[in-house]
Amino acid sequence: MNALTNTRIVLASRPHGEPVAANFRLEQVPVPTPGPGEVLLRNRYLSLDPYMRGRMEEGPSYAAPVALDAVMEGRTVAEVVASNHPDIAVGTQVVASGNWQTHAVVPGDALTRTLQDNGLPLSTALGVYGMPGFTAYVGLQEIGKPQPGETLVVAAASGPVGATVGQIAKLQGARTVGIAGGEQKRRYLETLGFDVALDHRADDFAEQLRAAVPNGFDVYFENVGGHVFDAVAPLLNDFARIPVCGTIATYNARGAVLPGPDRLPGFMSQVLRQRLTVRGFIQSDLHAFFPAFLRDMGQWLKDGKVQYREDIVDGLEQAPDAFFGLLKGRNFGKLVVKLD
Image (cartoon, rainbow, N blue to C red; front, side, top):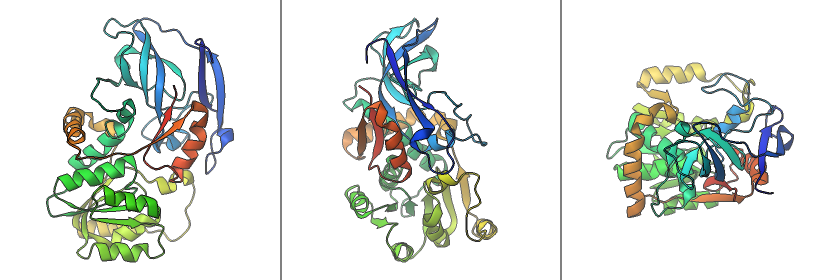
């Protein structure tokens, strides 16, 4: 690739069920030229996140779908290599919606965040010190609100959101139960300080969970859905809070009729009977909390009170396969593609 080439991945077709390689297309096109007020970015790291599966669909969502033949959406850490914006200098490191490509032109006023040297790897601005970390922080602050002595359960607890949820809740005095997929990830939760770490793939997972919370629990941070939620729901205490961040277990079944009985009426009765708070949230709607997140998380990371793990893949061409693995839980830690 020469300096005048932009390598990018576009959405070639919409998936039916699990995404496949044919849904994407790798292209090489000229690097775009920034117009007035715009900057040209050289993307250095690309974040891969579960929400991207929804962007591949045409159905209703909280954001518009990616158009066919358009570059796949994604957040990046990037360097400004040309600038037509008076307040943004060449060489500035930023977080932006740079998408699945090596170069991007964006309005200077639309840059998500300018990065300062804080001693952390740049990639953490896409993970623990970026959107996933903020999702954990704001979901707990605004909805979960764990109190000292309460018990919190979090699904997908070895991922960037779940791992951060557990550690923050522990700092706030809660007892924490983490649920992950596989023995290796379960053991990792123990190194993060979870009081109990469970493998949802175990044959007796539901029984293990019940034994871990003999008095029930008060906060369930939902990232998964599926059989994990089926095991969780009977154990909720009265007035429990459920921040709904994701339901990755059903992302590939959008629009399909799922097998089994309709359990929604029974759950809605439980919501009423136990006075549960169930609230979906999108972190971008709660951006007013972001300065407090940067302050608190920056201090926790500096003090070693919050740990993180990254799963870094080399090369843009590896992004589709890495994304398929993300939807199946193959990654271990925050999934980032290194583009340099």
